[in-house]
Length: 348
Image 1 (cartoon, one colour):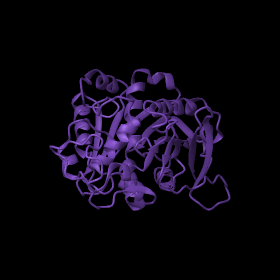
Image 2 (cartoon, rainbow, N blue to C red; image 1 turned 135 degrees about the horizontal axis):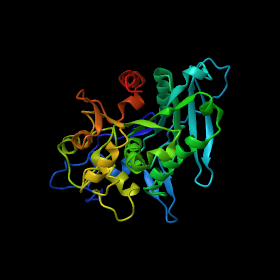
Image 3 (cartoon, rainbow, N blue to C red; image 1 turned 180 degrees about the vertical axis):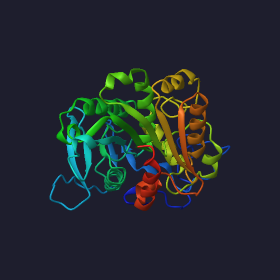
Image 4 (spheres, one colour; image 1 turned 120 degrees about the vertical axis):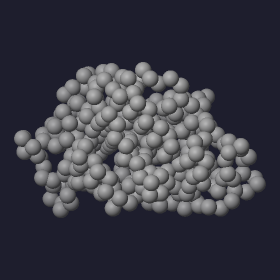
């Protein structure tokens, strides 16, 4: 197993005959032979008491609120819900605070990690959000959320909405002094993109309850979805080194409610009848931006969701690349993150 910046990247070595024959969600009629076992990819052991031991060592970067540092962005950590041990990192671009007549838009960013790994303090997320704040001229709030398998879905969705309610009511000076709350954008990567989608579904009928916070756009960056039936891209990219499909299967097994299958609404947004949900998402007038890449096994699912939302009258912006990069590439490659933010400048 190899890693890049501490994130799981599968190494291509054939699984031994002793590997379990029926890996999570495997489709023997379609799936190629796995190049890495799902457990070796995920490296999470569920203990008898329900806690989990995580094998990946993901580097962290501390916040730096010092106004005398030369960096383009100041950062600080603030508590959200001590009972859930949730917190958020705030990114404030210079100059700060903004002049009263030049308050900045707000981006609430939900990190990825398959619902089972990661936090806003991870170095790759810190760098990504710092670039976002600097390039977009926006205040960024990146909240943590409870992780599975200790806290299965919908815990992450509950925490994500709680974070928005905290933003709405907090007296935190970096927000109250510098943010235009009428320009709020929700952005999430991978599992965070899934969170943004489901938060949008929950809030679209009650958007007024968040005032003065006004959500303008949902940005689903390489959103993490799945399903019981393989798509063409999942079969073709089954052994993708960044996100092997059997590894994603195992993550879903840990994240979904106990006993749920892969067509549960949290995993597969296009399974079953969703017309009423999508009609509801149209009512607030939000734009939904879906960012995907041709090298991501989930690209077919991302395209399908964008097409179905657009067919229901939702304002959809599809930013799809066929270059063959990998899932979440902009998180690990800052130069490509800057290109993404250039595209988002016309939206935020």
